[in-house]
Image 1 (cartoon, rainbow, N blue to C red):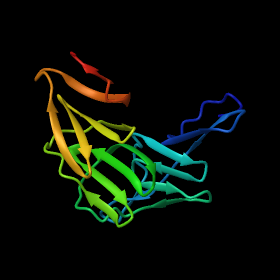
Image 2: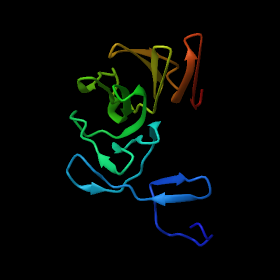
Image 3: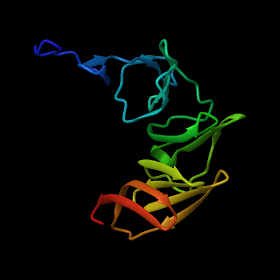
Length: 171
C-alpha cells in the first residue's frame, strides 16, 4: 500500500495519481450475466474520461460500466486500438476481430481461429499479430499475410507501410 505495508488484496487495475500507485478491483458482467473480477490483459485510453479495458468495461469519468458487444461469444479480448470510439477495434482468441463504428459492433472475419494478440494502426493502415501471421484490415475485410510457419508473432507496430515491426518467439 502507500505506506509500504504488504497489501495482499489482488487488483486487476492500478493507477498512478502523480504521487502513488493505487489498486482497484474492477468488476464486470461477463456474457453469462455473472459479475467477475478477472484479469485485464490490456487497456486503451482515448482520454482521461474515456478508458476501455479488455474485459470490455468502460470508464466514463465517473464509474466503470460493462458494455455488451452484441456479437457472438465466447471470446477473450486481448488488445484494442482505435482513433475514436466510432473507429475502435478489438482482437482476441479464436480469431476475434470486431470493429465499433457509427452503427455499433461488427464482427470481422479474420481468416484464422488462432489467437490474435495485438492490433495497431497508423496512416489508414491496420495490422494484427496472429501466431505466425500478420492480418491486414481494409474496410472491415482482412488479408492474411503468411509468415514463416515456425514464427510466433505477438506484437506489431508501424508508422507507415514502409517499415513494419513485429515481435514474438523464434523469429
